[in-house]
Image (cartoon, rainbow, N blue to C red; front, side, top):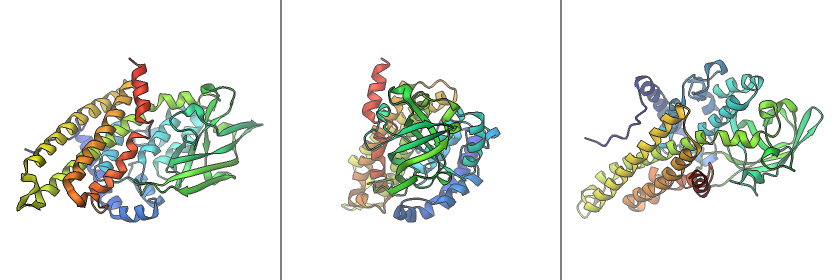
Length: 382
């Protein structure tokens, strides 16, 4: 009997939903992945199509245009993409943006933006990282200065996922530079509605080639005072911190799904590829390596599923979310490295799934807070 890695949280309704997601991924995402990797983004049409099928913002309440489900519906989408090595769309960042609006926005902000995000009419991005400020968000230098009924934003951001296609950007900026955490706010910027906003180059990364990761520039970008998230200055840092368990659980879901996809691809490869007159799968080293990989995945799946259940129940703490991000992303790197080794020279070719997964997975230990930061967060909870 094949080893079962299926999520423990799947029920009949979620299984049907997962099948719908899988059909979309297989019929509409996979066929254009190579072209998307060449041009550096998936284009707006794919986002709109996902919105038409109800695959975006699936855990946002129906009252705001979302699917009315919970995080498990989101996880089904991330799972389907990650196990196939598809990284061009980032519905996870899109959903994180939607949750900042849902959890912290004013009623007017929710009504204005969430339905359009759910339909895929606007793509969400969050502009945190700067050339001189990565995991240390208190070091942000982008400034939003209050001038009458407006805020004027000046600064630059880098490594912004969905940046090129974004129709809605949450900008982390200093509204009071004299204070640290309490001087930080999040402002809502619609690129099509402002002057002085500029998208820089789509960054040339070693992996995630189909994902539009960009530089963003703000030169006297003026937005109404009502565009401050939640309607009150100085809440940005606390808003960011409160939503971290959601983001880090997503990274765990992506990691375990990628491991499962790599394992399945490797199992198929070693059964078909011969060396010294017999399939590679018949060698003891191969069998033992795959046994180790399968065990790691099983443990990872159990941990991730528990975190998903706790997140849905509203009881996942920041330390545990940091643990799942830290451990699964580290194991993802090790597992995919072993799987590439079993592919031999073909594993080094980008035409093979395992080769693309190898370069794509490296970022998992960096974004969402580096793994070194995860250790610091965990250690503070001891």
